[in-house]
Image 1 (spheres, rainbow, N blue to C red):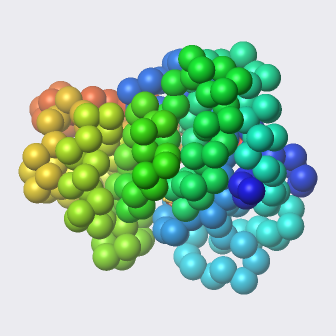
Image 2 (cartoon, helix red, strand yellow):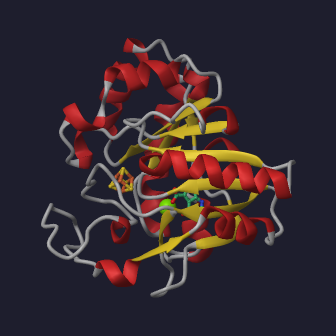
Length: 247
Ligand SMILES: Nc1nc2[nH]cc(C(=O)O)c2c(=O)[nH]1
Ligand code: SF4
Ligand SMILES: [Mg+2]
């Protein structure tokens, strides 16, 4: 069984869109959004995956989401069938933190590949959780987004050295850092040096949930990327559809 986020109460967040971030930006992809996260970022744009009623950890919106409206359980075969029925041949597993449900995801992706073997599978992870052995070989690309100090998470939870080292050693992994201020990049340089990550595998992405914020941060971030040999990634889906569920 998988616990998914919802678009509207009872409706699982499974949708065809364009990958809006990172190395596969612009590619038509079907997204499956898993509920629950092990972190709590102040600026999280999917707080409805974790900030359930009674969870008072700080968040900029300070909203509490009733669990019954924002989670739905679906079995692995049903999720696979819904993904297979949509046009894209690429799957993006996201959340929340999808690897909290890694064993069930392995069953779902196995069922999907039985229906449509051509699928390319990406996973968006915060990099603090490992993929279980059953899932790992089914993943073509890890989009690892370690959370820096400005996320508000204690480094002891967000930056697990052995996890980051394992992703750094995995050629399937790209690193995508959410940046709000130029000074955040010092921590990126530190992590990249510690784990010997080639700059060409690193993406800097502006924090922002509206076009104006993304554009204003992109202006100074472009220079920082060029100076350090990092890639820049925008958040295409925000420009196209805004900060909405199911896009
Ligand atoms: N279009 C689109 N691309 C995305 N790439 C990563 C996303 C995420 O929420 O993890 C995301 C998302 O929510 N929508
Ligand atoms: S790790 Fe991702 S899903 Fe979890 S709180 Fe942070 S931004 Fe949100
Ligand atoms: Mg998103």
